Structures are given as structure tokens and as C-alpha cells.
Length: 452
Image (cartoon, rainbow, N blue to C red; front, side, top):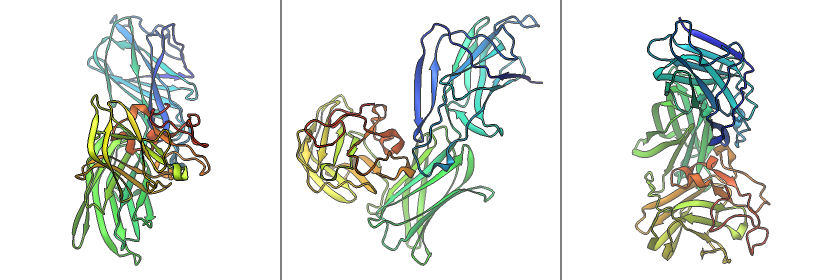
């Protein structure tokens, strides 16, 4: 048999110990923040009043306290009818050798800043396995723990903290295709369960520049199915097709490969899952290859909303200076070459269209638009240092938006300064900095890094 505790409206109180928070940004929202504290919690609701008392069998017992926070603001995506349902209950299981599985269902006010729940009378010992889920009023899982199973030691007559980071139990697949042949009219993408039921689908027409972006949203965690991408001409005849059987995870990082096949051969596409719940597939047909980014420099700020004052900020994350005799900036296949570029360790430079006091390099033809910007930083041999497929005002792909009259940059979060995380719009934010010195109604942080 299993033990089952029910707790209604148990919020708990912290002791005098300090509280620190770790926040994870996912899908355009802060979905969870683990709360770290050494405070001892008292029981409440129908649970035993003394969480560490000796059991009826005379054995040694301890308690665990679950600490977490779940915020549920709207996603930064207009296509987000898939916004995660509001959680109402926390479901917790505790298992281990020598005792029956303990299952706890707690009705908790998720609107509170801090969620705290105490599970008393846990047999003391090692390798106590704890799983945590949140469900809505219909019992549908809305959030999962970022860690599948916590394994802890429960000490006798003590309270053991378990710090949970809850993430939405759904995710998205983003496909970004550039340089599509002119024969391609539209791209269709579907993700179906193995039984044939459609989970998500999307269609997009080829843009004038050959760029297409698609987003498959609201894919439940752990869904097994088949991803299919078709490219068709104006007569709806199939030109390229790719399929891949996979199990979608909203929790971890995975890598999958697609092969687009045509009557005259095959073209490869790498699809990398680099952030929980978001899969990005990016392939440039004009270069006929997937891109490996060295990460020696990182694109950390983009000013696209300022007409001729647009710029790109680059950061050198290394402990040594970065120097090349030729640096290439490629925006939608328009190539710019800059000789003798040197960037000090842990430093920034800006490259823009107009000479200003805050610009290191300027090129009048460095156009950056509100859509379809395939920005690549390369060495002269073509090796890619960093690349961002920037969707501008397309917040269906998670990129931050702003009125076109607002001359503000977008900035990469400081804890995402790497060539993997800057591919995801959810890691960027419209600047909150003041006006740039010497500018005319421009807001950003050129050469200084993000303000968050």
C-alpha cells in the first residue's frame, strides 16, 4: 500500500534564515525560481504536526521541505494560445528502500511569491527518491521539475530541503530556413504522435529573401511522434521532404538531425535542442550546410529599430585578446569585410551603419531589418564564429517586440553570453537602459553589455 497525505492551503512560513533565488527563463517567461533556505518548516493541514517525530513503529524519521516558486505571466509570443494552464496542485512522491511509496497532493496558492510544502514522517535513510509535478484543476500536468528525480538523504529528526525548479510541461519546435530555392513556395511542418494524431502543425510561405520561419507550439513533454517538414512549389508539388521520429522533451537538451530529400539528392539540416522546451532547427540552403559556431565571439546586442543607426555588439568571452586580419559580418548573404580587428579579453566592440562616438567600426550598407536577419560572424576562410538567426519583430519565435517608433536595442542576458544561448529569442530583452550618450533618441548599452 501507499501513504497519501492531502494538504489544503498550506503555504508554510520561513524561519530567520536568508532566502536566495535561482531563476530560469523559458519560453519567454520566468517559469520557476528555486528558493534556497535553511529554515525549518512546521507541518500544516492534515499532516502530522511534528514533522520529525518518532513513528508508531519506533523508527527514526525526518521530513523534507519542498521550496519553489512558479510565476505564470503570458509568454512573449502572440501565437501563445498554448500558454501553460494555471497549476492548482502540487503532486509529490517519495520512495526508497524499506517503506511504501508516499504520495502527497497539496492544494497550494500558486499566485504566492514562494511555494513551500512540508512532507513529514519520512523514514530516515539514504537514496530517498523524490519527484514533483504541478497539475491544473482537471489533473492535467502543467509543470514538471527540471530534475526528473531528486535523490536525497533524509536525516533523523531533521528537515531536509529539496529545491525544485518547475518548468512548463509543453514546448516548441522552431524551424528557421534560409536561402530557399526560388521554386519553393511554402514550407509545411507537422509533428504527429506515433498513432497519427496531429500534435502541432504550421505553414509558412517563402519570403522574398528566401527566409522561412515556422513554430510548432504546445507540444507536451515526453510526446513520442514524427516530425515532418515538406517544401512545396506553387502547384503544391513536393520538392523536399524530411522526417524524423523522436520523443520531445521539455526538460533536457537533445540533438537530432533531419535530412531533406529531393529527387536529385539530399540536403542535411542539423536541429539542436539547446534549451528546455525549445527546439531550433536552422539551415541555410544557400551555403548547403549546417553551421558549427566556434563561439570565440558572441553577438550580445542588436539595434534593428533605428534606421541608419543600427548596430551589432560583439563580445569576446575569452581571457585573452581576439585578433584576426579579416573579420566578416554576413547579414542575409550581404558580406562585409573588416581588416585587422582586435578585441581585448572580456571586452566589447560595436559595428554599425553610422559613425558615432560609441561605434568601433561602421559600414553604411550594414542593413538590419525587423525580419529575416541571418547574422553570421566569420573568419576569412568562412569558418563561423557566431550566428544568430534573428527574427526581429516576429515574437511567434520568442523574440522581444517593440513599437517600430521605439529606437531601442535588444540585449542578450548576461548569463547567456555564449554562441548557443544567443540563438534563442527568449534569452533577449528590449533594453531598459537610458539614452545612449551623444545619440538622438536611441536607447541601448553599446560596448558595455546588457543591463540585466
